[in-house]
Image (cartoon, rainbow, N blue to C red):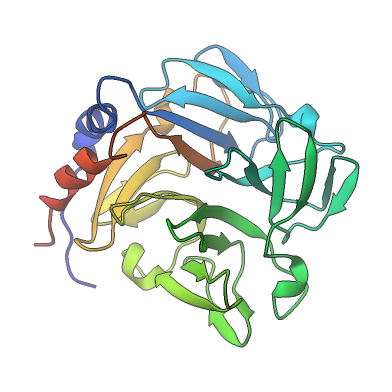
Length: 278
């Protein structure tokens, strides 16, 4: 692949730009990790089914959605908030919420006001086989669903890999590749674990393992901003923010709470755009 240029030394700038892009208020991240117990961030201990709200520096943390909301022991590995305030989930394992059972490939819509849940467009039966697992989810402005899977999969005969960002057209039920694995990862082979789409066409991403992206190594506990138009990557949240003594801080679900009246992450995307390929 063509040589790429970015530097992990831009971590502080990336975190600052995330805040600046949201205007006067700091943009807030929501995340979960794969470790079952003992995760610690800013003094908060949480489990793999919890969604934690924090800032880009990891200096504060609170439970946004508690694992106890799952009827069974859920492991939240994909999360998004729709414009109407309902949540989209997927769980690493078959789980129950609102007393209902869901498969690990189901996309679950949850109303936090009523505690009710139902499937949302994509279910295990949507896939061409029965062994898939949604690992990340977001949506476009038109309502189409962007997602990734833990293993290679196909829908309607269209195949995709565990490192592709896939777009599901809610009006036709068809899929296409939004961003290919070959374009994101320097070696052309990586797994996406969490994703958040920004209106300017950039993505916040996490990976299953440590990966080289745009010439920089990102850890599985990092969140980075990827700009497909310029093939650039910038660190936004560092694994070093975790304060427990664990050996793995693998982040698997992410969402960004936009600051009111601002263009989310446009400032950060502009910064990344200046770090083009050599």
